[in-house]
Length: 85
Image (tube, rainbow, N blue to C red; front, side, top):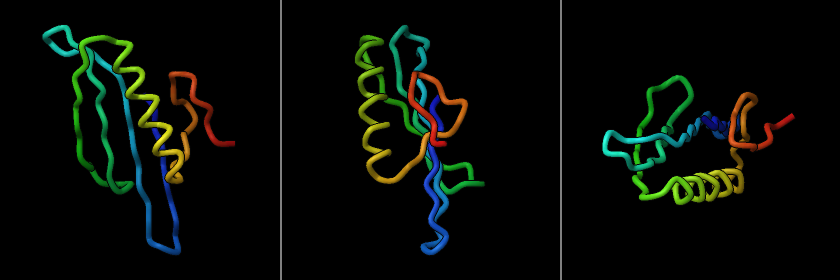
């Protein structure tokens, strides 16, 4: 699981974004995303893929987009993404 955060006290912003790759009951690979305000349950979305490679590419693309928007990868995240110091 990759966990990211974006905070800006001046704008009262405290957001989280979590993303992971898993398998469905039908054998498809899915990307599970969860996001919202830190401390809240947030929202969840699943996107299904025919191949694990397609799911991993989608995960990488989503992480790139979130990092461009100011999210910071937290320590302990996997898939080879570097955490912020």
